[in-house]
Amino acid sequence: MISSVTSTSQAAATSAAVTSSTSGPADVTTENTPFGELFVENLDTANPTIVGYQAPGSQTMAAGYADSAAAASAVSTSATSATTASTSTSSSPSLIPGIASNDMTAVPTVESVFGSSPWISDAGGNGPTGAFNLNPMYFATQQTAETVAAMVGGTVVPVDTFAQTPGNHFTQNEPNEMVQLPGGAMINPGLVAGFFTHGYQASMVQQMIQNEVTNVESETKGVSTT
Image 1 (cartoon, rainbow, N blue to C red):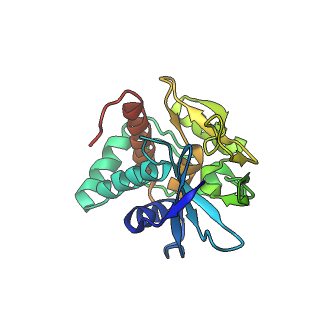
Image 2 (image 1 turned 45 degrees about the vertical axis):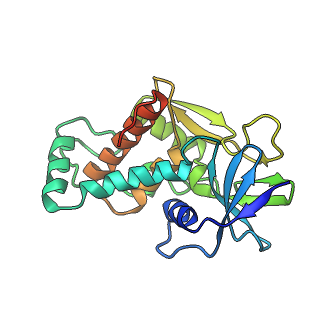
């Protein structure tokens, strides 16, 4: 039996990390399942949405996204930090398509880099209680995934991230198109595409991407980045 508990602090952090709007969602409930915890928004309505997932003993995908956002925020805490980030990143080759290494003050948009539809719009699945929606930010299109893979030198790998544990009762309608790095760690290109939705300069977005790669590689090796 799946039991429900509401975790105010964890739910708030999770919802803030995975929603693109400035106002928070209504209710986020923690669902304890045989394969980990699901964070479900509007559980008691006709349109529940899973906004996060945590496997037993692991960091949530949402928390990983929050770490990246926090790292980017730290870069922008002062004009000096922002200038330093811009200078150091501009001296290295640009990872961002359409942005030259000497033009890192440009502001790329998610559409300019990934096209008009960066995410799968109808991501969802089925479980013991019926059909549910999944946050599209976790579901990059094939084109988006291939673009991110080219940025970081990775390979696109389809993974049922929310329903990959054997024996669980949840299924996904679409796999997550993940990017596997040369060392074996994986990043979610849908979340990387989200870095381009805030109006940041290319230097900062590139630093966020580099931070994301560093963080997941360190976690895969069991090394703390804090």
